[in-house]
Length: 177
Image 1: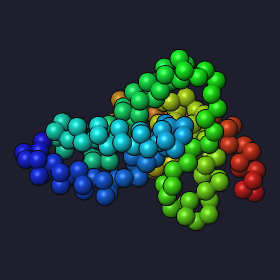
Image 2: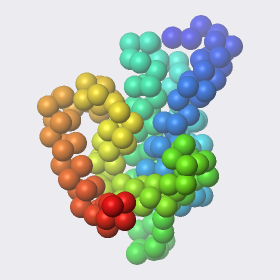
Image 3: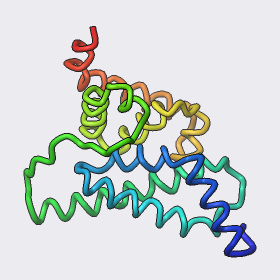
C-alpha cells in the first residue's frame, strides 16, 4: 500500500522502466490495428495506475502488472468485439504493428515477428494470454498466479495453445528453414 502520492508516482515510474515490455506485448497481442494498440496501451497504463493502491507487495511486480494488464485487455477486447459486431461485421483488420516493440524488430526480424503476432491474434483470447506468458518465459507457477488456474491446468492449456499456434505458424516456420 502506498502512503503518499509521491511514493505511488515513484513506484509507477520504476514499474514502467522495468516492465514497459509487458504493456507493449499485451497490447500488441490483443489489439488488431496500430491505432487500437495505442489505445489499449493507454488503457493498460491507466488501469495500472489505478491499481497501485491495491498493490500489497504479495506478488512480484511483473506478476501484478501482467494480472492488471491481462484483465484490462480481456475487458477491452470484449468491448471492441461488441462494437465491431454492431459496426462492421467481417471487417479485415490486417497485420498488427507497433514501432520499436521489441529488440527482434531492430534485428531485421520484423516480418516474422509480425506473422507471429498475427498468428497469436488468431488464437482465442485466453490462449493469446497463455502464449504471451510462455513467450515471456514465465513459469507455470507464475502463470497460475496471474490466471487463477492450477499449475497442472496451466500446463495442459499451454500445451494445447502451443499446438494451435504451431498450426497457425506452419507457413512461417517453413520460411525459416
